[in-house]
Length: 81
Image 1: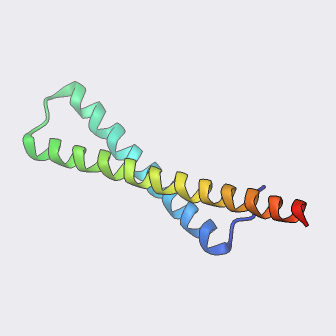
Image 2: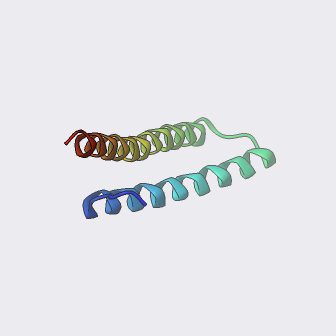
């Protein structure tokens, strides 16, 4: 397991929960979409949720990648000494 700080773990858990909630909302919208067309207002909400999903996913992946890069850098420093 990687060595995430407590702050990063809390942020990861928050982002993961947020992603799941947004996914559930989008799934709900998609089920409704099959039954009836969206009004423009509802379509705007769906578009905003999709954008939020992507933003949150990008932040989560960046947190993980930053930690991975920091761990690799620390290992390289240790191996060089």
